Amino acid sequence: MFRYTYNTLVYGREPISIGIERVALAGYDGVELVGEPADADLKEINAALSANGVVASSIVSIFTPERDIVSSTAGTRQKAIDYVKGNIDYAAVLGAEIVTFTPTACMKIVPESNLDQEWDWAIAAATELADYAGTAGVRLALEPWNRYETYLITRTVQALKFIDEVGSPNLAYMADTFHMSLEEADIAASITLAGARLGHVHLADSNRAAPGFGHLDFRPIISAIAATDYKGWISYELLPAAGDVWGVLDGPGAPEFKGPYTEAAINHTKAIVSELGLD
Amino acid sequence: MTNVIGNEVGLSTFVLASPFTDNDAASFDRVADMGYDLIEVCIEDPSLLSANWIAEQASRTGLAVSICGAFGPGRDISAADAETREGALHYLKTCVDFAATVGSPHVAGPMYAVTGGPPMRDEAQRVEKRSRAALGLGLVADYAAGLGVRLAIEPLNRFETDLVNTVEQGLELCGLIDRKNVGLLIDTFHMNIEEKNIGDAVRAAGDLVFHVQVSENDRGTPGSGHIPWEQFFLSLQDIGYGGPLVVESFLPTVQEIARAVSLWRPVAASMDELAIDGLAFVRSSLQPSQD
Image (cartoon, rainbow over all chains, first blue to last red; front, side, top):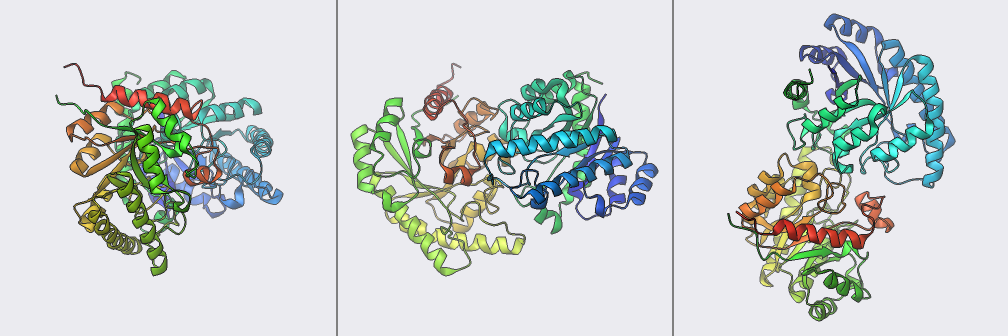
């Protein structure tokens, strides 16, 4: 019933065609791509996708300090909006359905302005971007991050308030079980609360490894996702056990996240889907 | 089945006031009135606290005391430069003196490095840093042994340190230090993020669990989130843990603390409620089972 995709961010600097082939061989339907359209070779990606019989599912936006939707510098806020528009264009040209969205720079944990002002900037940006996405036939998915990666929207209830305030069908809620394992009292209950607003899913275990390699019980989580009548992608954003993820990916890399976790992740979820009789 | 009995249950001063000072006598009364056995005093600024005052307050209110360190900028026993290491050594010895005076069995905390320090991109660099930590903490341990005090080293999650994240890495560091009075402080908040199986991690540490902090997955009231508590308390039984359990959270209203632990929102209706409900939860979890 679910469609599966794997986030290639963790493959680091490996050529994308190798990653796409690995994901396809492991049985996924799609590939989640990093939102760096300026560095992407569309021809290479499209050739690899069609050669391996998979599609581009979604684009993961990378919010650096230069792409901060709520920066106190107007120019930076504009750059962030332009960056997300670029990812929406990128998604549209690849046929991907989802672009992820978080309105702060990743790892920025102290507000620059007051929180009400930042919330207003974020709402205005999301409203503009949701319109833009709608025209392109793409949806934005708002992802709360854990307390060490952001301060503005860390929890489902905040994300839902934000989504309801924007009030666009093109802005959905996104669940990432690693972040939720830090911030939510009951992950499944939070997904249920999101209900029809659920638009994208990142599964990762409590330690950000493949499901099954940490201590989360994914049965109630999968069950809650299915109960929302979810038609989107099940993706896996797995990342090394470091605060400085980029340092690991640029340096020694994360070999277990290639073959072993790529295969283990989808198999783990499919076993639960089958156990729960959801297939 | 044997049960964990007689454990003291404590509350961290981080829930009450920060920095904790000699003006916070009323905190001892609050903690005692709530029904706690112990207060965990965090030595944020030693110049604002005196050991004799803590001992007096403890004896006045009938509370036991646990001493824990805070490792902000500058307090880095594994720093590359000798002056910084010397400063951290001096601070840790001061904490040991506090522990000896107030009757705390240990000095606890992530004493191997500055908390939230810059990441190390190079494994060789990390190995060197760990060696310097072991060397420095060996000196602290020897000083502490002379005063009958133990060191309880706390692994922190990946976002707060890249030196010791898991119990396994904590045991490695204990091995490098190689002193009988060195063990671990385990904290359920960090374990939730880093351990593949929390119960297995506790059992792996075994007798080297010197101290325990309980905190929910979101730093809220223990029992209100998704930490596998039953598994955790069973594993404490398995290792026959008889030491204290301290309820820890942080005041989101204190800017420095909010920044240090990335906690920007209240995690309970009030800190008093967290302390009272947390105590009730820990006590009920420690109850002898019926079978």
